[in-house]
Image (cartoon, rainbow, N blue to C red; front, side, top):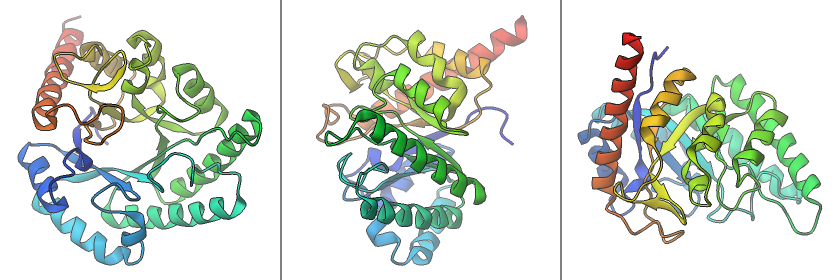
Length: 290
């Protein structure tokens, strides 16, 4: 069991590189693990391709991870490029059935590559029905998924995000309390963007099993280190206080959404990783002196 967090980098930070070279770069940067994007129509490896022959792709990925001294920190499943067409709480039973099938096969792929963690999205509210109906269906679908992941020895989490029904810390807190054994891939940036302060977000840290970090500020869910307003020294202290031992995933992305193609990912990743690492070590020293 890990005694303190290790650092991971998202492979989807470098979409202009091949997957092999993306993993090589992450290994060269000295990361412990990699957050693997498993996004339909939007990542290096995608469910509709990999799940046709998971053994072949797992064998190749395991080799690439080993060559670069990396672990599979997280497998982040998204079944469509948008948030609603195949959300876990889609009103159409057939869509939900296909989604469940993809999820079960993703668990098997996750076991093959040795990850102990899968992240998914929580769902959305559908205009053709009541908000309560959309919400309750999401709770039911997640309960089923948590049970299936646990049977495979994998932790499942959701990431509250812009565009979901968990767009605020309050909504995400309610959700995690309503769904037994639900954990979070906690990402402050989605809440920072709409004006929430760190102290309003950090109440979610006790539920986190994975963590995404990047620079953010008001009106920007991704920005440079110099413009970032999240106090990552405070974040490090909260991780220590709550005994967080999951990965800290540095998650800069490069997509044409929410201005997320406007920073130099490589430089920002290095700066933020080093800062959080230094702050975590310093906070640990301060605790020992007390």
